[in-house]
Image (tube, rainbow, N blue to C red; front, side):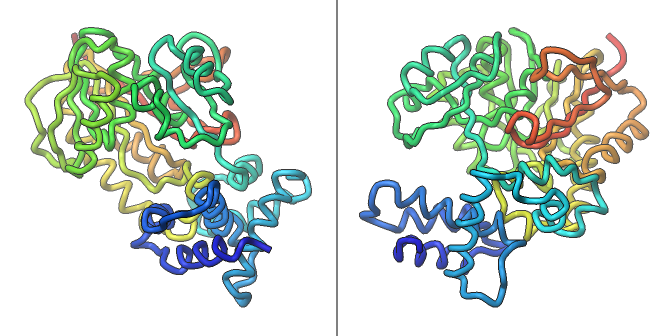
Length: 379
């Protein structure tokens, strides 16, 4: 049986979570309100809450929530030791909502990856991967070259409290998100627009690739996200950026024409369901269709800011057909002045370029993502 305090807090969070109150947000607020939790208790509460939503399809709704939480934690431990004991057909049927079959093929390996504990990825300052590994411990690099700065962390430290984090030695950034920066491949001295910048993870990576030279415009509709971006940029010693709010509408935040525009568009987040299992049960097919319309509008409006010869990158952390393939096809039909650019997967050493790229969580342990890239004709 679980520690009574952990069980009680986990149940409180689960009861408060809903479509308008995501479990991860409720969890953060609850943990902030608690004082004097024993070492490791916050981590145990988080694991219990996420296990509950991860294994919801296996739980009896007639049982008390506390019993369901215990069962979910038990299933999580069993899966970690012997994942082969869970049949593929059962995983496909229980791990995701039924409507998803209308939107995508559901690979058994992907369904299995949704039930595993997510990996934690860091991005070290350029060329400082090995130094960060030595300081933090419990890290392994993903690869070589620029991927030597992509580190998987397996330790138990609160990374936000480490001196290395406060010194700007690394950022917490998902591996697939790092891949988007490498696909964008901005050069020093260029001008880029991170049109849906959020809290700035990709902005900071673009700046690192540009060696803090040139200029990056950063936009988001939420002012608080841009304030967070500013704090992160100061810690990372990023200076080659400007912030300008943008709601995705026809009125652009600047008349500047860009060498590259990156649109990491708002989406259903299906590709993050291994990390955010609560969203599996609150996201709907209607959400997918509404978001697709928003994505098409953002692309159409942002395209005007791409200079002749410049590039437009469209990325979403979802795999639904309506938000990926159909959005890209609709954009090409409406904007024939843009030609599709093939994409080389930066996470693979071999392989031919593809018309669009799909990154899957079962391949490397990052978020699932779709990426398409275009070049505006002309010079």
